[in-house]
Image (tube, rainbow, N blue to C red; front, top):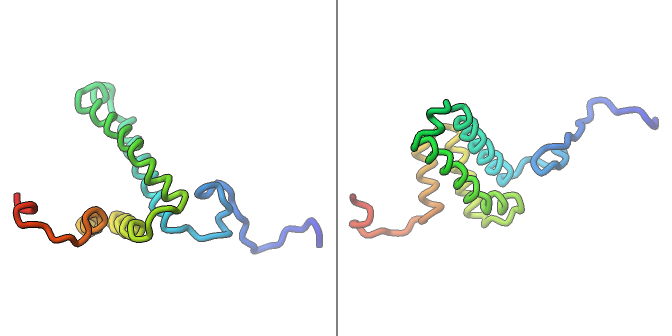
Amino acid sequence: VHGEKKKNQPRGKKGGVDGKDETKREATKEDRVRRWIKNLLTEWEDELRNRTEQERESREGRLATTLHRQTRKDIRPLVKRLKNQTLDKEELEHLHTMVAFCEQREYKQAHDSYILLSIGNAAWPMGVTVQ
């Protein structure tokens, strides 16, 4: 019957990642990593915003604000590649694994995944790793 809404059918909601209809596709690994980055940066920004005036104006406070701004700027190319789904599959897998471990608070394993992403399993001379 025309004009009647069907019951029990999922209704898409706009405003999902990229404003797309969320019922048409499941979140991709790129979406998950982008969302995690966005949430982390937002939490960090909230912490910076909630500081006292004295904390903000201190040397350490100004450095923290500068670091946040620089991080946002520097991470844009990665976020853009995630959005456009142009990131190398292997890089995406390592990032996705890293995010999953961070969400589980398994930071050592997340660090290991980061090392694999950044340098791989390359053999290093003993003097390079020993400090």
